[in-house]
Amino acid sequence: MARKLPPLNALRAFEVAARSENFTHAAKILNVSQGAISRHIAQLEAFLGLRLFVRNQRDVKLTTQGEQYAQAIAEAFDRIELATQVSRREKQYRVVRIRLFPTVAMKWLVKRLARFHALHPSINVQVTIANDLVDVSAGEVDFTIQIPAIPKPGVRYDTLFPIELLPVCSPAEFNKHPPVHDPRELLDRTLLQSMKRPHDWRSWFDAANVTPGSFREGLSFGNSSLAYQAAIDGLGVAMAHLELIQDDLNAGRLLAIHPLVVRTADSYHLVGRETEAGRPEIAAFRDWLLSETRTQK
Figure 1 (tube, rainbow, N blue to C red):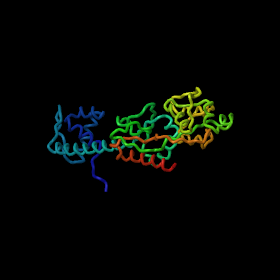
Figure 2: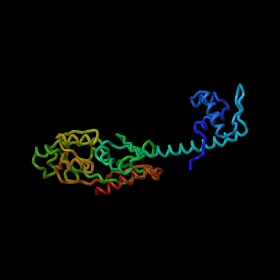
Figure 3: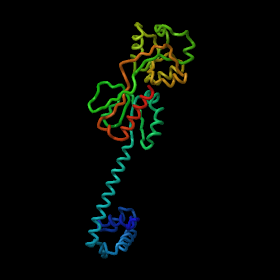
């Protein structure tokens, strides 16, 4: 059954005019003419069958019935305004903000986001890049993916995947030299590394029981994705994190120059605030990302 309501524009004009008891002031607030306010009030009075204002030449005053109706309408508009604010806040909360290192974003996360969007089209994922560790407790973002240093109270850490080291190069670089059987042979090659991970080559050589006095001077890059791209372009051999270059291996853009995979003590974690864990979009993103890592194992 349709509600028997007066015109909503007339109600809005009356609610504003009743607060100030001034049609001119109400017209300015609603950005309409004073005549439009007068017509809306007359329309509402005709609908109700009663007078809401006493009109004089110089001003208008609410009648007793007008005061009662104005109070009821104001309360109704207050409830509408509150419900609108709540709904807008809920809509704003349908955003998940994640800031992370460029390599993890480009080599691992971004390619997976299409699957999340297909499952949760109403959640807007905002991805930004950081060159330093991200402090999620500051509240600027909801998540980061990184290797935790010292755990912080109030911060949740979910393990995504371990860091496994593998030396890789382009097919052209692979075929340009004899096959590498002894890890020490790599000491004569151009070694590529990320300045963010300066110890990865030494960790791999230590696991391979190679104790080099010094590495051959190679090339260093600001992040791992640049080092991986340099390897793809044939500049040398990069020490890669296996999970981050899996697509390049599958596509043949990179080849393992030696089969030894060294699992380090470090792992990548999804990092977020404990206090936000109950938000539906936060829980949905975390559960989905953890399921992605379980699927790929």
